[in-house]
Image (cartoon, rainbow, N blue to C red; front, top):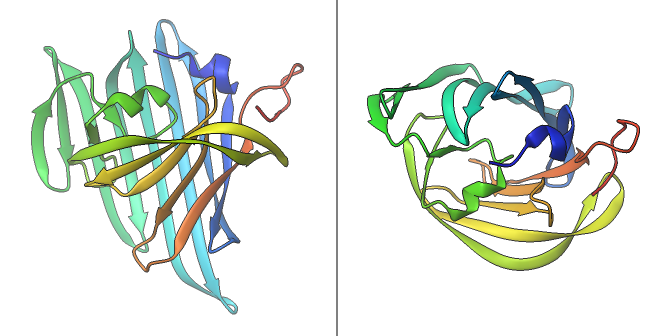
Amino acid sequence: MIDPIALYGEELRFRVLREGSPVGVHRVRFQRQGDRVIADTRFDLEVRVLFFTAYRFQYQSRDVWQDGCLVSLTAKTDDNGAVSAVAAERRNGRLHVEGPGGRFTTEPGIFPTTHWNAEVVGSDRVLNTINGRIAEVDIRPMGRSRVTLSGTSADARHYRYTGDLQTEVWYDSDGRWVKMRFQAKDGSTIEYQCESCRPGPTGSPEAA
């Protein structure tokens, strides 16, 4: 498994755009506890029309990893007032998942849709941390492209999810998550632009 703290430092941060206009922030904070790595994610999006909030989306999760496998996960989503929760825990060699659709077990090596771990690109099944379901996906490489990181341009590998998820993600040559793009329920385009992708030499954010 990649070492997220070596890649990102203590925090990975994106500015979130809707049709090119800023609407939110997505942060992932990393910490190490013994031989475990913990990733805390928070995503806040707000669409305003004139002086009113037309739509609000809030998401937070914690995933715990050990020996390259997901040990546990908790996630909570507030989709404009509709609240849902997902929980997963590895027990007896299986990952036990509970979500809005019920309970089930799956293989412990499955990746959740938190995206920071580039090793997911070899998968054809992922755990959707919003609805608690297994998503059947085809993640295809789309070649290299230039992306904007912290105000500069860098080379990245572009991947496209099809199947149960329709998403585009970009990782740099070291495996850092640096960009994402998908279509929202209303048909608008949501894009993540990385503001802090790696630690600089003194701990300050620096573009890859």
